[in-house]
Image (cartoon, rainbow, N blue to C red; front, side):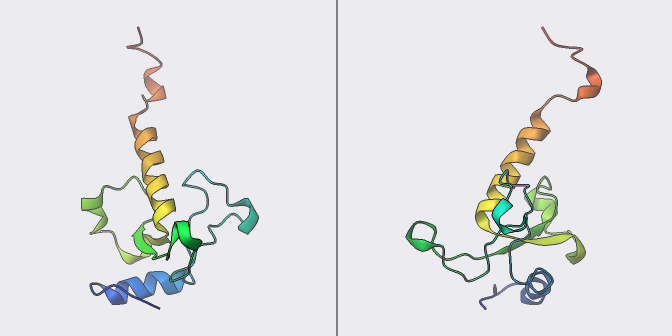
Length: 110
C-alpha cells in the first residue's frame, strides 16, 4: 500500500483502523445502499478510466472542521475518506452551515 511521505505512522494507523476502506456512511449525500451503508472505495484500488486510482485521505470525522484546524485533530477523531466523499461531505457541511439557524424562527425574514 502506498503511504504519504509525511505523517506515515498516523496515516497507517487511521487506514488500518478503517481496513483501508473509505469510512463515509452517507455524509457525502450518497446512501451507499449497495455496500452496507459504507463507501466501497479502497486505498490503491482502480475505479476505471474516468475515476482512476483511489488514494484515501486521513481527515476529520466531522467534515465541517476547517482545513487549518484539521491538522490539529487527534488521531482518534480522524477517518479514512476517498476524495469524492470528502469533497461532497465538505460541500454539504458548508451548505448546512450557511443555512439560518432555526432558533431565530425567521426573525429577519422579509
